[in-house]
Image (cartoon, rainbow, N blue to C red; front, side):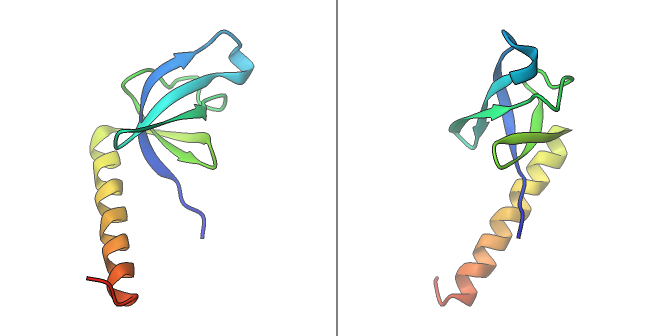
Length: 84
């Protein structure tokens, strides 16, 4: 299954527009992400990231809903695996 995770853009390095890199926070975990395909993304925006590449800009409400849905999926998987 492929999965895109929402994160908040903290900073963008635009020294090379073709390699536009950003620092993106995923619930406090910060990773380097390519925003080469999202020239409209700015610090403070939420982006969906798949395999280290930003694929879409989403609003804050949509990002929050996606994170909530992912947490619920994780809880369901935990229950199916016999976890608490």
